[in-house]
Length: 538
Image (cartoon, rainbow, N blue to C red; front, top):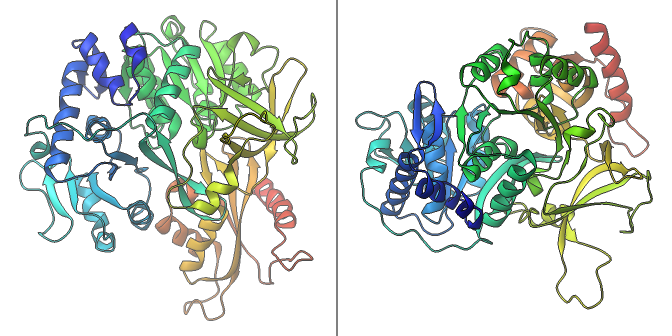
């Protein structure tokens, strides 16, 4: 498999593996396993289908389906055509999907028939959208002849092999949407170079190999979720797709498929640690990896007791730079609260506000440099300038500035170079592995026209990482049926938001929300109140 290491474009990870081991298993979904040769052929035919639709170089292809082979074919096929893929979390609601489609001018949307029907009321406002590819359409695709025109999946794969548009490794490959601290989601732009470098780096420290079976339990719209595909294809390994309902489903898949590598977020690990792991799992589960927040120490202890032969990898990463640090398994006993050191081919700095390097154990901002640093936020120069900035302190002989990503996270580095997470500088809520913008929640609540004012807060929670607590005041004349209460507002939130954005607790205050000296809502005081309310509820 040494030839795979020479890939420079993301779709070449799949194509090179197909050239070297065409009959090796690449992708398993339910009872179906596709070999590399068949998967690569399907991706190339999908690329041909996009070109026949007139897709130009760099145009965006949205993918809004659950984890299934068509998702993988569409993503790598879009790249092979010279286009850009935009994975959309399948739990998002229609208005949220429409915002993404409009924001990055998606030209072709890949989705399922039920999802397409649910999107119908909002798609007419997506003026750049020309075609919707329906993955489960047997005959004619659903919908009418209006824009977007619908195309059946089989039709997309029916053509030949037109040559895709020329791209190089610095061209845009994907836009991954992540919630911003001031409202709407931001589209993080990642190049072919970013993602292929990430695949090589992660596969290197996880020691991924062709004999591996990786379970893709995380959403493929997450960088860590999609990384299961890129690292797996880089190594010529098999990736198993799962859309689970219960943690037990994940454990059953690990056992049934003899999974060798599992990456998950802390809330899932907390649930998995409470299950009884069958004897013998450790004989094939070579490693388990954590991302998306700190794994509680008790959870790590329980997993290590249940899986004594499996290596633990504790990781930290930014969507803006794909991946940042990992803690080597041999350090898990000595430094279980550390996020480790920089991954291969990346450097992580701890800087003061003036750009100088912090001393040992001095808190500072985590700043990452190297080939994994993304291209900025789509169509948002102001936010890009805040997060992606020239690296200070370069030698005078360099003419061009080097752009690094400033995480906004406060960390410290010990005497041995290991990093420890301290906190976040912004007000983002990290819940169930998701980054949720308080402003986005508040905007959605205001849209219900039920509240006078509100504040969405993140409160520490032993399972979720942080729980969302919504504190709101009634709107004068907002309800004809009586005073606003928690069940009414909670039901409105459930109708508007995906499950991870629904508040764990809603508090109705009759008086105005407290203000700080600047006249802004006093979030610090409200968080203290919310924490006590959440404790009293549990």
